[in-house]
Length: 453
Image (cartoon, rainbow, N blue to C red; front, side):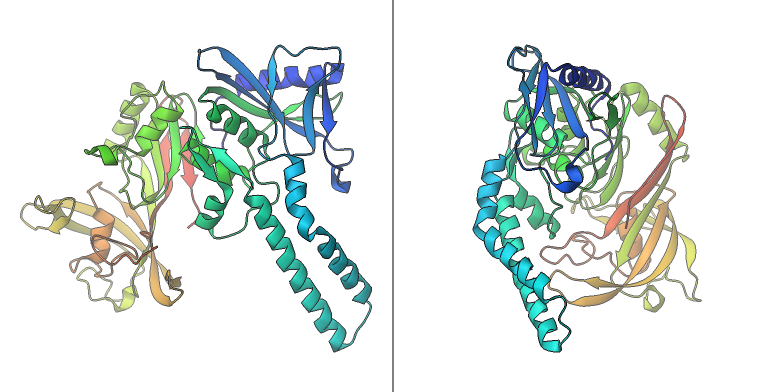
């Protein structure tokens, strides 16, 4: 993951922390029995610089994992760092695991004893033992997951089990124990504001070096804690992966104030209020550029107006394009093309757009048929669908959704489209802004970002 905050100041204090451990002023104390792969290895050390409720600067420090904790040496009094404990203590984790621990070890020993047998009866027995062991291990992990609760940037509490339910899969081991997660959870629980965050890899007597947040664990929790999934950020811009269901900009009513813009202002208070350079529909997910300064906003808006920014979308259409009856559907097996359709707002049915050859504004889209896929509905049933790549040449409201769904277009609504098609309970619009290319508004360097389908 890309670091969500400035790293320079925290990196400096990470090196200060490492020197104090080398000198003996601070100590790394083992709190659990080390695993074989951890022997003779270094440790990740995290530092978070923030301001407290009195606007006083505070320095937080923590090692990664639950094996190590930081302490002062007996002769020293720490006046610089606050040492942050694990989100869940090793004692509580061991207590949660202890219920099934003996039985899991017994099953493992029995499996090892049976491995040299070759008969079908023994193979069946081993399979049964492994199945039972997996069942107990999953039960133990679930008990551990129930212990983890975190604070987001607004001080709200959420649980690891909520994230597991959203993703539908179990997380990697050690989830919730990374430096960044511990430090941010501690700071957010007190309402403190972040200035700088970094982690370093430390080995005694060696120069510590910076390490970015890990994709495997931090990506599970940081977006929820921060309110945004950050693909890139610096002093001028922030590029995010906007989830379906989040507005790009605040709505008109009080109930619709939550948006990518509002969350950016919370995360980076010094950024401009109207930061969105372009917009994605609330139901559309994918890459969105936000500007932190007026200068960056103006530059990027000009790039959009001059059509030098390239955006690509992927969509799943609810059917087979080659068999569709839309007026713009390929009639001779074409795999790509360009379509222009005129649409305008229906003022009596906002935000619905309608086809209008006289007063509509033309929306032009390059499209490419990427092939037929099987889509699994929320109820588990399957349907054939067509994977499309769209490159809009204009920026009309609902342009891609209308091209897909309207009779003058392909007459195949995008799956999950609540306005122009059908959205089943638990379903999301299958339209994602998966690629963008632009020039950095200050450096002029070409920047490209892409997401998996």
